[in-house]
Image (cartoon, rainbow, N blue to C red; front, side, top):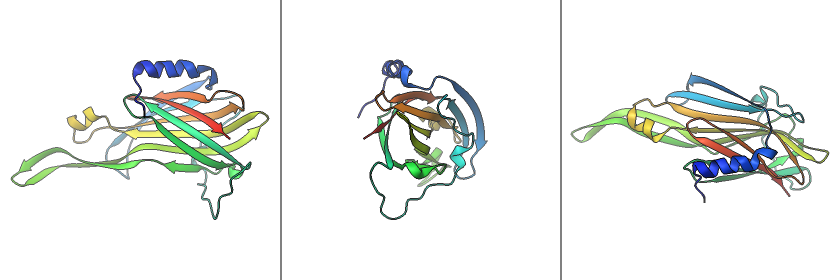
Length: 212
């Protein structure tokens, strides 16, 4: 396991610039969650590529649900995503993705529910406060995988939801951060993994590759 400092983060970005999609657009917005506590502040980065176009609503496609025994072989691509976030341990996720996935979405939820009693006060043996709950962690989506000539391609979306410790200490209704990135993944079979950056309060590096 590794923890990434800001200096190391910068080094990783520089090392991966040649492999990353070049153009990017960042948008921000907020919404009130209907399924958990709090206001969610979203920072989303969209990369573009001349080789692959990911439709604006591709993440809303039908969810892929495997049935029966999943065959392993040339009709599947083995994606590996390494995620680095400043001050946090490295995360590594692997995905066996069928090339026949098409516009369906393979979605993996790595979030864990977090619950807190904020601004708690004790009244004798009874402790009262504001109940605050949200899902913390990564959520990954993959769609449109294929091999085009010498390139592996796919649309990949990564979400990371979290709350800063300082905000948990300061408020009974702290803001929830949702950092998102969309990557039109294009990797030459003999090239280095694709590396992209994203984030707001916490900066992230995603290193994405297809391996045999």
